[in-house]
Length: 369
Image 1 (tube, one colour):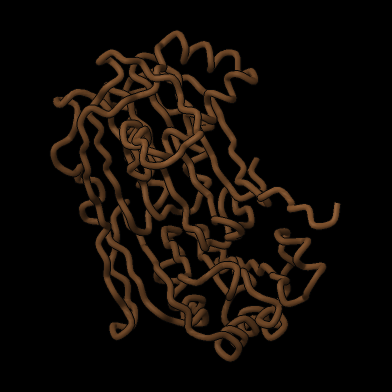
Image 2: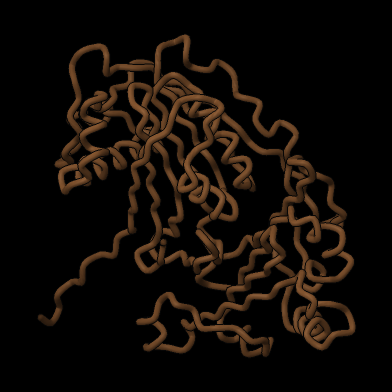
């Protein structure tokens, strides 16, 4: 029908349930490790802890107290030069991400494995003349106008073909030096799990410490999820289970944005949202603590916080937020900002059960396996 408004695109949500034993010796299942490690880096991590006053931290946990990263402006020929590769990329602990809109300009990442992935507009792609491939995102937009086409170029900076005096290396260096502009980016280099100093232009370098914050609120209502119900939802995984899991994920989103059940129920605005079932007894009221780390966070940082969350004898959920303007997300899958740029990971860990719920949220046009 002419004039009919098309449905608004929504993000994709993938959910897994798994079991684990609450012992420090027990490693998390490979699926959990893969979910965390297959994402190149995170912009922020939130740990939400629920329990009585004794279980709530009063000070920020000193994770990554000696970690830092850099924000600077440089050109790609500097980051791909032999001297830079030998100094930082050979040990496979260097990460770099450009700070630029993924859908309106050129952006890139350099992964710890030495792969450079450049997402660029058609104009830049034609000027560079390097071999790449068309973006798999926004296919409908590409049919309407060539200006909206995007391309992805991937270069293995540690390959034998990428050496000085070889044609490919010299060609890439010339292209990046003559055909690209300086780009603002953030970078991190690790040695034995700790950040190390980097030799970057002092006039354009800003050294930042990881920001962490703590926020505590008392008497927060928690959804009615007892041990038997958690087990039933996790075992059956039917349509009803998926509905509960989706509602639970939305409730996690409310708290992550500082919106609490008692505050939502105020009558100063109309609200038709259907909430998860809450009990009226004191067992579903708990103190809530939110710990947050912001910066260029690696999967190693995320695993440390995840293991700490598992060791707590209380209900917790963990949010790991990917950068909105990164060219890739999980397993180097192409990423775009379209609508909201989501590429996030969440875990819910229950003290009364050995079940763990995992949630992955990505854009409506992206893939996740």
